Image (cartoon, rainbow, N blue to C red; front, side, top):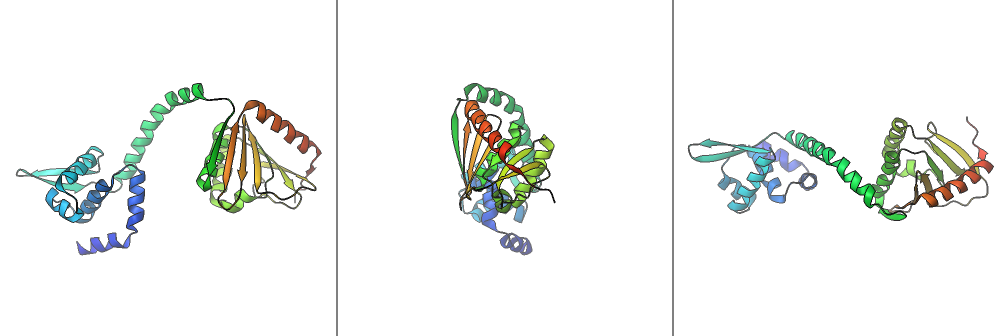
Length: 253
C-alpha cells in the first residue's frame, strides 16, 4: 500500500488533475477516483476521511463515477465497498464521447451553415489558436496561396508543421508560396515556390484558401485573423495571381 502511495506522489499531481478536469471530471470525482485507484476497495466513510471532503459529497462523486463507468461497488452484508475501474477506462470514456459528438455533428453543421454571416471576421491568439487556423485549411480542403512567409510555421511549430504536411497530402491540398529571395520554406514536396525581389521582411503571413483569408502574425505570442468573405478572397487571389505571374521560379537543387 505504501509503495502505491509513493508511486502516486512521484507523479505530477497537478498535471493529473488538469488532464482529468479537461475530460469532464469534477475536483471531487478526481479525488475519489485517485484514492480508490491507490487504496483499492473501501467504504464511503474512509474515502471521505482520506479525501478531506464530507460524506454527502463523496456519495455524489461516487454516483457520478459509477454512471461514467469509472467506479463500481459490491455489497458485503448491507455495506457498500467501492472500487475504481482500471485507468484504461478513461480511453474508452473518451471514445464514447467522440462517438456521441460524431452523431450530432451533421445537425450542428447544418445549423452552423444556415446561421453563418457573410463577411465574418474571427481572431485567434496563441499557438493553439494558430493551430485552429491551419486545421481550418485542412477542413476547407482547398489549395492554399501564401505570401509573406519567412518559414515561421516550420520553425515555431515543427511537430505540428510535419503533421499538417501529412494532412495536406491526405486531403490533396497543394500550396503556392511567394517568398523573399533569401527566405526558405521546409515544406517543398507539396508546395510550389517563387520569389519576389525588393520585399521587406515581415512577421505577417497571408493565406488565401476557399472563401477565406487568414493573416497570421508571428510575434512572440502569435495571432491570426480569419476573414470569411468570398468577394474579398477572390480579390486577394487575383492580387496573388498577379504577383505569382511576375515572380521568379525557385531553382530546384
